[in-house]
Amino acid sequence: KANRKFHPEDSVIEVGESKVKIGGGNFAVIAGPCSVESEEQIIEVAQKVKAAGATLLRGGAFKPRTSPYDFQGMRAEGIELLLEAKKETGLPIVTEIMNANHIPLFEEVDLIQVGARNMQNFELLKELGKLQKPILLKRGLANTMKEWLMSAEYIMAGGNENVILCERGIRTFETYTRNTLDLSAVPMLHELTHLPVIVDPSHATGMARLVEPMACAAVGCQADGLMIEVHNNPAKALCDGPQSLTPEQFAKVMGKVRKIKEVV
Ligand code: PEP
Ligand code: MN
Image (cartoon, rainbow, N blue to C red; front, side):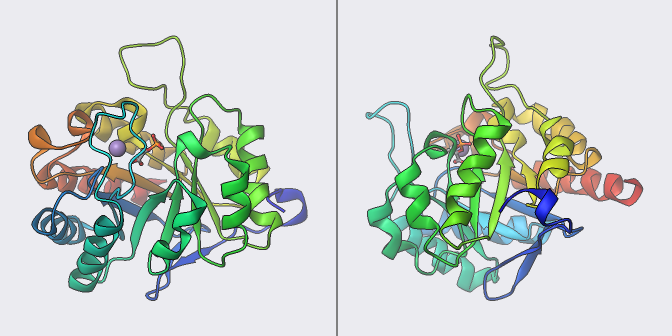
């Protein structure tokens, strides 16, 4: 179902009540903190990223942390706060699911994210395939494009064809960057599939100063959108501070992205 051969035209995925379009020439910018931390934080970030041109708001509520002793997210309360931020700004919301039992909590979430660590959680993918809600499927930490497309297929086979792919870097021998951003995946996937492909330069690099150049490169290779972590106070962030941009830095990246979009 994901194969371009049987579906030559680009899929355009509509997200939320406002029907924000992603794919087929419609560029999406998902921005917001790694984790929802408080009402003030998420609302402030939501207003600022919206002003800078973001089209969707992200924020983790259920967090897949490497250490069980690290902040695990605000969970259901985090989703409530994202809904508040949606009410304030009108931005559709994106947040990660880790457990199919939590699906009822995601009823009003506009775009459900499957994170890298769950890309091959096939039972979760099958349950998400029963919904009609769009799914943002991130590439696994060490998965091939073929495996990634098969995971999309798991969701689509159940009847939910609203899948967006997100390249977020893969594990290589390199240690200076958090992951290695595989930008060649973008044009390759555009050949293989009609599904939209977006790029997350924040998790790919792990470093705020590399987000702008990689975001620009992603636009240059025809990505259908970006996911960028933005925090009101990156130094104090409970998760992924080093890769988070301030709202001001994000606005600057958006300015560059707009200029590159004019020429590509
Ligand atoms: C995230 O987007 O917050 C996240 C955990 O990303 P990934 O699954 O790509 O590591
Ligand atoms: Mn993060």
